[in-house]
Image (cartoon, rainbow, N blue to C red; front, side):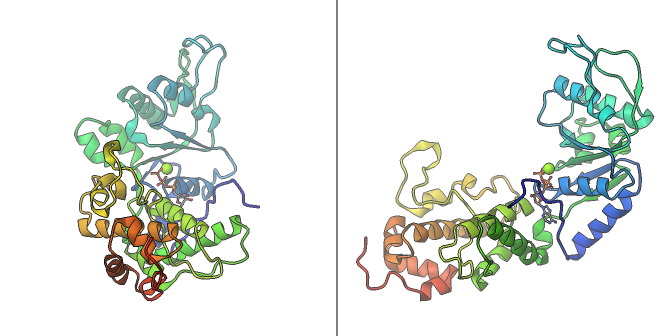
Length: 354
Ligand SMILES: Nc1ncnc2c1ncn2[C@@H]1O[C@H](COP(=O)(O)OP(=O)(O)OP(=O)(O)O)[C@@H](O)[C@H]1O
Ligand SMILES: [Mg+2]
């Protein structure tokens, strides 16, 4: 049975990954705050857990809180606790995360979104180990190891007045910056296989037959703006959508929204051609990414649309061409470009156009 407990396993063999893991092991031994920086989906939460479980505090509490998910007062009350009557609805005294994580580790996720008032209180506890419950005058003490994470450039935020410089100095005793997946492509096959085998097991299938060469190349070529989380989703979806579970995965399903029926932006009626949808930036999931290769993103989107049409038409290429509003020879051209194997397996030949 698959477990609902997220896996804490961190896989990787690339140099940048191994250096980062070494830094994590070294930092785990200390009680000083650590800042974990990385793009979305790079494994910041896994690193925070690793810092705790490799430390001498491993048998004590490891608590996490997402600073972006709660309004200011609620976040303060969660972190520092409150006395009865501190605010409307506070009928009983409640201990906060700092008290509950005493002797353990507290993971402050998305630290960049904290208010100035909260940053001041955090500074006090980092400097002096001291805090107060909301509505209470008595200073309390807690021995908590802080790990904070963000995907924001904190020095830049601090320089523009959006984050306290003194708190940043204290939190950044050691800064662990996680490499994005595109900077450690050699780990993609390993991670892809790992997630594929997990999904195969979850689906109760006997074994995972691997990826075709074309699929493996597509995985290596993708930009992975959502990093390992995106890779995990893409692999799990591709395994789940396999037509023949005995044959290697040949179609990588990068975009679950790819469909010839996808409504155009703004809700106007869908058009039967690929081009207007391909230029919708949201469609590629990389809107606003600087440095992205425009042509490559368009190619990826075209591939997704073609894959979706082929799947819908059970690989009848004539039907798929018609669904896409393309001539058969146009679709064949795309297939020769993107999927020579599919071009050879001419499922549409000799069949009447839909
Ligand atoms: N090296 C790795 N090996 C295996 N799985 C990993 C690895 N790194 C991350 N993951 C998996 O990728 C997903 C995202 O990781 P995590 O939640 O730690 O990222 P994050 O940086 O905190 O993302 P976000 O910024 O969106 O909060 C999780 O499912 C995690 O288990
Ligand atoms: Mg996270």
